[in-house]
Length: 250
Image (cartoon, rainbow, N blue to C red; front, top):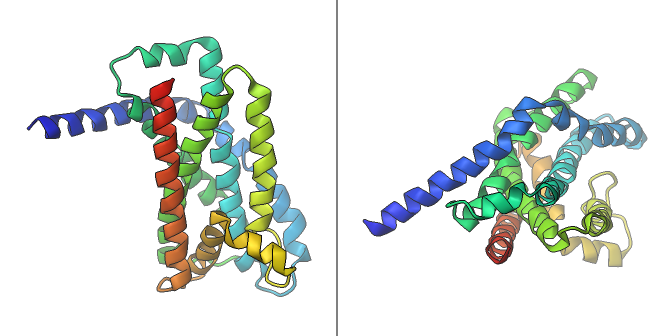
């Protein structure tokens, strides 16, 4: 009975934090659209350079993951702002459980990801992109899991940076583009040098991108899709574990 009560209380705390974090996004949806500007630029500038009539089928899923990467990796800046204004300290002295503070924030990343994916798909369909609905829905589940982990890691970085905002953005930008390029989001790396392909194998984003490409094009039963799901789950588990530990120490 005690265990059940504790679990229910934790779920309630997570929902409370989730609703609190989601409120500004719903109040100002333009922020979600703004994070798509860079992926849309990449879409407009890189897609025409790819050979073949089916370049959008290859490129769009990668851009969807890129949008998720850009958005979720930068969300720690919101926590930095809260620490500067003192609202984070007020959350810490509230009766909310510390794990809920990071889990609720991380779960919020699913909503912007869904909105950005929908907009990107709608923009590209008139230009010839075709979408497999069933595969895309499974792909969104994998992306949602990945966003939770990435968002938790971003908040952990914010906690480590504290009042040094430059450190957050320096680390975020230093890691962002190598991960992006090694995942083969914009250009294929299959014909790249062996050292590049070896590095790509250690990048969890590589497996997520490969899975999304297959799923968006209708291939569901595949070992590549399973590998993408496993990679997303690993990122989520590691992110939540590290983030929860950092929040408890805050």
